[in-house]
Length: 202
Image (cartoon, rainbow, N blue to C red; front, top):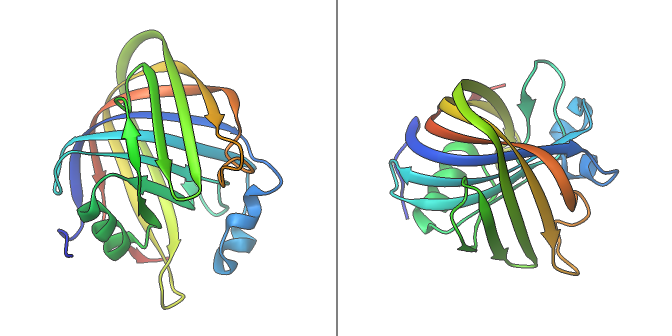
């Protein structure tokens, strides 16, 4: 299955949260990135893609630790979506470890969302705090390609954001439970336009 080449420009609603990384989080970095592990901060997210190159779909992801060399640089160790075309595009364009999952609820909005895949199940309840304000953000991701090369790409977001709180729950035995912490965490709800650039050596 083929998918459009990068860049991808999408209209999205997203929920992003963060917490102190667990001891197991650094072990998720592939060997070429192991020495780049920096701040022990884990980022998690749920995203609803409303419009974009491969149509509407839902996504869950996790980035175990922030990397050295520049602010806002990380590695995506987990990503699951409910679109086979998105799986193909994520792997081909950015070497993202996308897998298929089932979702219930509307990611990126207040309320409860569940996601379930092979060996894991996640429930996220989001509560908004305050009003939405104009916002923009930028994150650089470093991924390892099948040939062993490290390449990076940039994710930018422009729209409106408001503070939130999330509660994360795992089913017993979930593969994500060792590094994506259960419990309550600070978060942000974002709605707007996301652009993901082509990958480059880095």
